[in-house]
Image 1 (cartoon, rainbow, N blue to C red):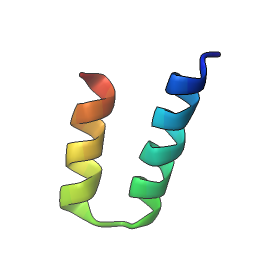
Image 2: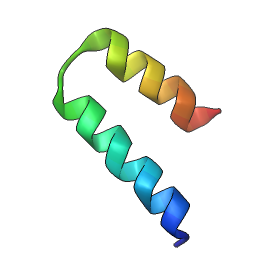
Image 3: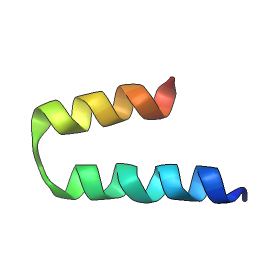
Length: 33
């Protein structure tokens, strides 16, 4: 697994932990983009 992908996943998981819907949606869109 590349370091960039690992970093993206780490950020994504942190965003989900925040339980902020707008952050989760934007991070999900970023992750899928």
